[in-house]
Image (cartoon, rainbow, N blue to C red):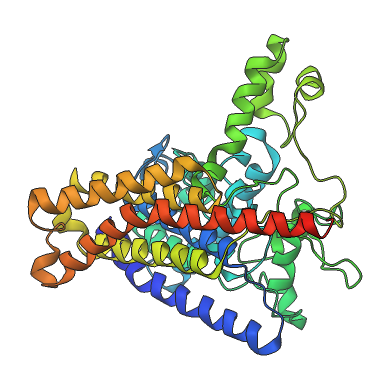
Length: 428
């Protein structure tokens, strides 16, 4: 886990720099693809995923070392060729895992967060799942196991393979000529994130486009069909934790409400989006029928509210980076408490962004919890040894969180009311 944490300590700042560069480029070209609250939601989702993965919060059904031990038929000499074979095997596994997520109701819940943004930019690349708590990915690595790719090689290649999927989440790079036949490009991935009927569930590859071309899921970006982004049953929230479990919640309710026992059982394994006919009729859910005419999710946000939301996210990111840096020193169960506090904070302030009163009180409790930890231990998980004034900064953050959450919520609700009165006066 410490090795993974160290890799993230390098990757996270690098990703942030690229996101800032893309934002500045959007300003320069007058073609901005970022929305403040949507971007904060995306980045916060990335934080929750890092916390969940670094803490190992998943149950692995069959581990890759187990598969290698019992299925290996070959032994490739440890050269560059072994890493090439391993990389291709991981990409093959990634294609089929990705395709399963798009094809089956139950598994769509593991992936819906990644498609939930109605924008398309580098930030939405960080919308990664925390709901995939049952690990079955190793099953897709059976070809690698048969070829005898050692687990340590997979452990080295897997993070690299994941990080290489970041760059192509952008609208600013056009088609790339011959490279369109060699690697997954931004053009191909724009198609994948689109909800246009022509594009839905296409281009499932992660690094190489070969698999899509081989297995019939490739679709070129059409000059006369501009991609429209999001999911056909919109999330309608900035809260990444709620988005992670919305689809699962609907499946549970639909299974409970279904009259037929057959429907109660098969709903989990039917194609993505399938609902029992009787349930769909009695309990309709909002779905986008015309992708070219729908209103994107948005909540009003004054400059002060946006600044407060960014402050919350930046400080949570600082806390995350320190957790990764001091991962071994903090140890368990301290890491679980630390991670829970980060999750609660993200749930709280993104709920405030949604105008949910519960978010205000969660933020107050987070502030009190953080301050109580500092007062009880006289430190923040050993931070005073690294940075003498660090504990004061963290304590100030938690105090401000508890004090300002109710105030910022009241401020924004007043601004909302003023806007509504203004619109009413104009007859809108």
